[in-house]
Image (cartoon, rainbow, N blue to C red):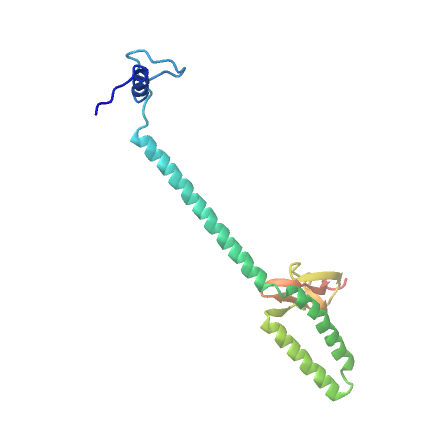
Amino acid sequence: MAVSLDQNQQPELNAAADSTAPPEPSGATGAPMPAGAAEPAARTVDDFQRELDALRDRNLRLLADMRNLQQRSKREREEALRYAEAEFARELLVVLDDLERAMQAASGADAPLSEGMRITHEHFLKLLRTRGIEPIAAVGEPFDPALHEALLQQPSAQFPAGIVAQEVARGYRMHERVIRPARVVVSSGPPA
């Protein structure tokens, strides 16, 4: 069975054949390039290698940034957990101060009451130590504004200038962080 082409169909086939032909090179303006003109330079292997190296470098930097962010986040979470009890500890220190004042007031009074308060005080301090809370040494130590809060300076025959002469309120630290500075009186040296 032979297929005959109609004359009307013939131009359509010729147009389809022309559309599969490669386009003619053109210049920057879109106009056909004159014969003998050089084609635009093709990208070389070196160009691709440089681009690949730049992308690898960028990828490595992004990975390093991501690792640093993860490590910093982990450290911050660990520190937040480590010091989560600090505010509660500050509130307990007020109770400890009251217990110490009560012990001073009860000294010389009823022996069993004083002994009971002393035992309670020891248990309280032991509980604080298990949570990493320790008292800050003050009397006889050089004044350190990171650890001590100076309430006043006064002459002292016993201590040289710049040394803590008296502790008004004990300070505490949790691990290595100060949760309450010691309130102190600092010596200004021997009286004149």
